Image (tube, rainbow, N blue to C red; front, side):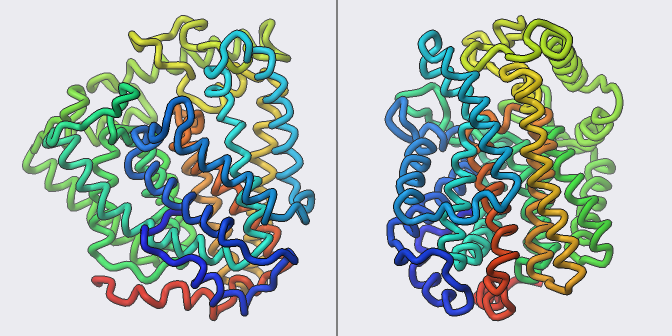
Length: 474
């Protein structure tokens, strides 16, 4: 939920309070509202610059940890605990955090900061609790975050194609590295980009955003083509969201425009046989053959580049994890948070030992927290998704369109995150984890507010959110 730097949060919130009752008796806090602004900016940076943004800070404290610290302070002072246990997902989330803590503490003395680093896959769930508590303390903040996401979608679609074209294709300018870490300032993965592209498409289709013109659809198509070449899991995530949107909204113009542009682009690539090499991935190229290979490799073998090799490498590692947990001595405990799984399982492919997780967030939980951890992880996801699905069905049946749109948007975004995290190291880092748990927190708040403060998404509030967006190119 990102924002333009010059947005004025306090003023917008004050204009929306007339249509949303205040749950908390505490006075509105500039501190809490300022933290929401900071969180939005942080999320924008993660989406645009990926791992590079994550290394802003003074080691070992980086921007994600700073955001979490001030979020906890804001929540303790200006949030509210009221209503937490009314949402079943909160209970399972607390149980997961407790089990994760038990599987992390024994390894702190041996692995130190590495144990904390591995534990963020569940530790960043604190963002969900903070966002939940801060939103229900002042319900108008939900509409504010939706408005910020609308702004984020435009910034993302403008900036990402430019960055990817100059850096991934043209290879200039040279990307500087942070002086305190061997990490480039811009280091976004294709999967991350595709997840957000899917979220943006869902936001349009469910009608939470303003009517979308051909220019934005073209920008989205460009993002999908550029990032889809790099990452098959991200491509699958986007296609799953696209298919769901087309099934639920078969007459939506955004979907059909995107499909038409994609088909035309494939025809042009096939006829011209254009091949544009990628600077930092020599085995990948912008071409018709590469796109077809990426799509076919999702369901079958591929001889193109390194596609089949990486698939077999993942499957072999996941099989070993199942063997030593479900069928082995680590069934009840896992290996804990701290040990380098790639080294210990003999699947390390990075000379510096940077790889630590098995390119599957669910397998990471199983390997480190055992079967109990995986069961809790599944319950955390299912309780949230089923809760939103039930709210979506109820709101749609009652004709509460704005709420139905919000619930569906969050569900589709969650689905994209789940798919990408199944094939990549995504939720194990701040660029994916903080985004994911923020969306999770917004979902919990949406379920609670739908029951207690449904007027927070009244017609007048939603129309006011999108009033400035009247110059879209159609």
